[in-house]
Amino acid sequence: MAPLKVGLPRALVHYKFFTLWETFFAELGAEVIVSPETNKKIREMAIRAAPDEDCYSTKLYFGHVLALKDQVDYLFIPRFGSNHKINVGCPKFLGLAEVLRSIFPDLPPIIRPYYSKAKSGHKNIRLLFIAFSVGYKFTKNPFKILHAFRKSVKAYKKYKKNLIIDENTLHQWEHSEEVLNDRPILTDNEKPLKIALVGHCYVINDGYASLDIRKKLCELGADVITSEQMPRNIIEQYMETLDFNMYFDYEREILGTIMHFLESKTVDGIIHLMIFGCGPDSIVGEMAARFYKRKPETLLLQLVLDDLTAEAGLRTRIEAFIDMIKRREKKVAIHLPTLRIS
Ligand code: SF4
Image 1 (cartoon, rainbow, N blue to C red):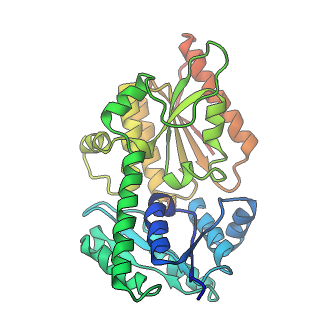
Image 2 (tube, rainbow, N blue to C red):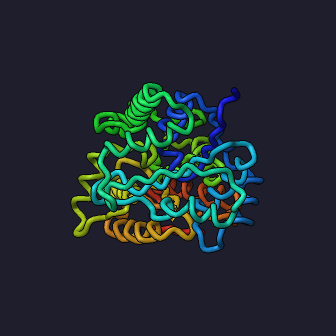
Image 3 (cartoon, rainbow, N blue to C red):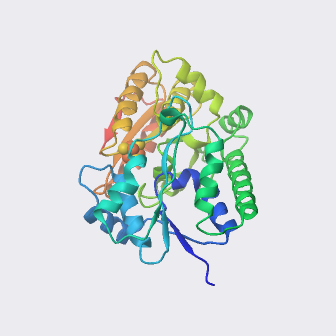
């Protein structure tokens, strides 16, 4: 019998958990089909299909679902709330499966497990329950499900271990003893610029949505670190200094990274990618701009991306930003306000 096909939309939390999910379904014997990387066709389907008020990232999710819907037996759209007992992810992740089902009644069956430590007090054992309830759709062998679960958790932990650096590695990168991502392209005698690229993982890792910003920075001679690579203890140290709890989990990573580099001054510039229509981003964007006013030594560029952001315009803005950094290094006196460009 041909294996059942399960479709994973390559958007939003997929960028966080893809290792876990892909390994789990593959070990169950399913054929895993991940939607293609975001492209023009997916973007156009997304813009036509998604509600206008959704953020750009959520809209793209719609495009990825539509790209998969005729190829698979099941769509996997988890309702992921939170992996922390207080802090939460984006509420949009919770309602996506229902919204999609109501707009497109002809979608294949949706596997939509719910998990939230913060709102529903779920414990780790809940993950095992989810593994079995999902796994039985693909096999009746409980040992196979248990094996798939264990293997996927192991693969996920390994992925995270490789992704998130420790404090020592951060210091090595800050002192140019380590390169964490693609090597910057440099002309003779040029020194690489240290740039922190900050934003949601599903933006900075989506080449189309971010208009290939990582590649552009590399071409401009930038040695990049991303917010998702940052040591967790550093993020948490900065969050402790706030006089309230930043309860959006992903925004903790973004704000903590910006605060660290404004304070430590160990990078030449920070680029904060924000998404048009994102509530949490607008809160954190404002806070980052205020911290920057207090510590303006490291330049901060805030770029708001949406489906209308043009590649040529973005390139010009990044080039101008890099140029300002270089001028600053040559001690040309400039004072910059936060650059927020949409
Ligand atoms: S956190 Fe912001 S960008 Fe991400 S899905 Fe929610 S609203 Fe959209």
